[in-house]
Length: 327
Ligand code: SAM
Image 1 (tube, protein in one colour):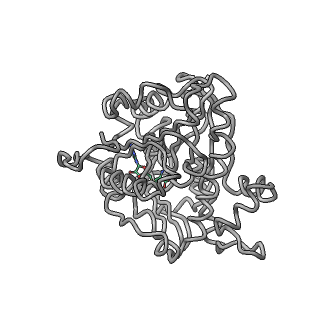
Image 2 (cartoon, rainbow, N blue to C red):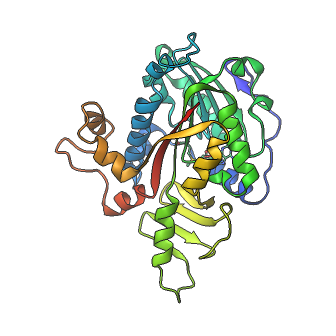
Image 3 (tube, rainbow, N blue to C red):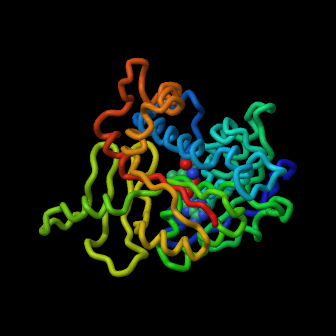
């Protein structure tokens, strides 16, 4: 585990086998590009839109104001666990939400280092306390990687963006992930996230002609490739995912929503929000805060025109946003 005072003398990075190894290697090897270079991405419109959706989720369900509405920890303005924090792409959003404490964890150790560097580069007056740790939420307990002082008080929010679907390989890995989400989340706290929309991916799979052997679909921006049409059980329905300038042929697993909800209930987590990304857009485009935010985040230009082409617009709707409340 690393915190603000930790040195960089780390043991060699842990090696992962199978699909987890492919996932770790992929995310570790993606270069961290600066803000300016990021603007040159061929899918910058899609990336901006995804960031806007995450900002909407944070504002709606995880804003520190919520922390005082129910069983509040009182001392904190907002304490956040970012599970699968990646390279720290949401640190500025959390800074804007004026949180007081942040813990970032990700299976890709190099990404975690980059997230910590990004946190260090935040302006001092907008910086919150932060701890970072390389961590696999599918197999490890949170308390085995973060020091006890980080977990001494519960989190107000657990955020897991574009990553818990990696847990849906097996029931035991989903259970471990949910246990880790719920274990240190206060009652009344929020679990927010974004996942691929299984129903939509399965609809597209079923639309493929029966004689077709190549079970893939997509467009110039994304490609989904299933290994099998039919799958028994709720876990391990694997597909490979490609997203231009972001994800290179990485194994992912379908998250069947009803199963996710019933299993989450066993960990005292209950759904309060589920929306496809297109609907997040139509629900909030005229909102007094989220509408202007789209302009600031370059989701639309000053004429209200979208910065995404048709292919990017189709690709964003693979995902849905969710929020659960811990009861
Ligand atoms: N949440 C970040 C964001 O929104 O920018 C990163 C999203 S990236 C698409 C998915 C992240 O999930 C990667 O950083 C990957 O390393 C992480 N991840 C995948 N499986 C994981 C696991 N079992 N435990 C922790 N992190 C995991």
